[in-house]
Amino acid sequence: MPTLVTTNSNELKQEVWQLLRSYQRDKSADIRNQLVKLNFGLVRREAHYWINQCQESYEDLLQVGCLGLIRAIERFEISKGHAFSSFAIPYIRGEIQHYLRDKGVTVRIPRRWLAIQQQAIGVSRSLREKYNRQPTDAEVAAALDISTEEWQEIKLAWANRAPLSLDVPVQDGEEGAASLGELVPDSNYRSFQLAQEDQIRLQQALLQLEQRTREVLEFVFLHDLTQKEVAERMGISVVTVSRRVKKGLDSLKTLMGVE
Image (cartoon, rainbow, N blue to C red; front, side, top):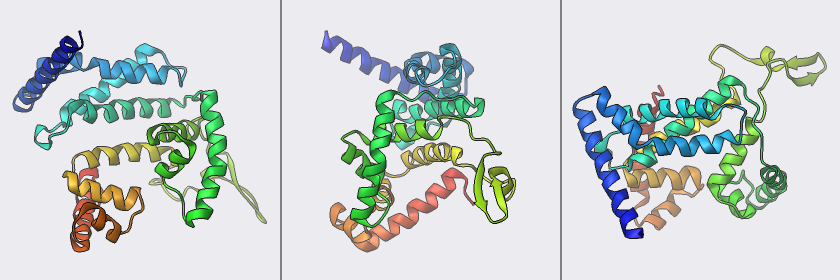
């Protein structure tokens, strides 16, 4: 039975791959619909997760997730060599999160996550004192004995547990209280609620970089290693690390449309 399952899985991947090739040559709606049908399990998986975190219907989440899947199909490039499922999941998840944020849905946080979030307050303080800097997600997750992915999901759920009102008081000085709305400098202001969306866009852009360049950026900016430490770990020169950092940042700016 395991052999049969593996064979079917490989055949499915081959079929998806062939359809993606065909779709890049001919933007046919029929081919795109076939790809949506074959990859619908990715949408179901994300919808099942989020249905326990919000008050939206399962059908609505499926529809929104399919929009993310279609975006992934449109933007996938075979030449990059990425697995389509790994590429598509951030698009599906991002579309659902964007939908929930815009709907102003209050997210129900599991009791276990609430306990971990409370524990993380003390853990983060201890790590800041130990390293004399803000700890990374990986360091906090390790101290909590959970995966980095779960810690990031907990932070996201906590940040979006309720809509943020522009009337909320954020300053109480000699001249009285000021609301968040009064402190917004201009129309280009982006609230903290968009941070996760930016993170998803960054993850999608990172996936499109050449592997060694992506690894250098992750070591430097996500794991807080010095360029010398990165060079020693990867077996390359510090000059090469510096060049890859500059090249990677320039590529990310282009991919994310940052001027």
